[in-house]
Image 1: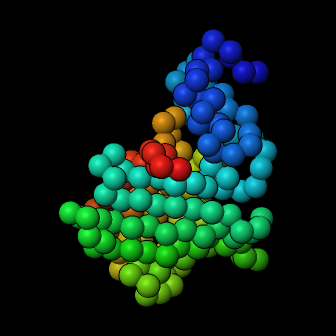
Image 2 (image 1 turned 180 degrees about the horizontal axis):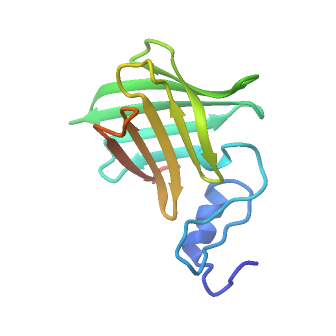
Image 3 (image 1 turned 90 degrees about the vertical axis):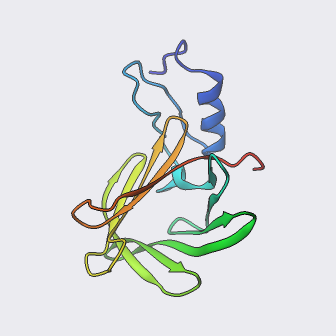
Length: 162
């Protein structure tokens, strides 16, 4: 049941931006949950860091493919780019990264929640883990070694121009 007093204009906007689904802010302060739709619908869209230096964009192509890209800028110049693919296979979902156009490096989905996903590749040098989670006001991404060391985290909000 949706608590109408806790359903703010911001959470309604977030629901519209995150595609069709029900958005509810829970009294316990937890993140909103989305129901219905295709796997990883919460992932879709344009996301950028507060300073706008890093931007990640995801689109869906059918029920079993998402395509994305990540661009990092410094002083207006592109210093890193990455093509991304998320695909359903017989063995499960696979996240494929093509940093600077080279790849793919594949990471298997090992954990999935309603608005979170963790992908791992223990044989890759770094990162070995890529994790995403929808937060109440955006999306976080974290890469790390398999043991959790050397974590690097990005906090994204919806792109202002999308």
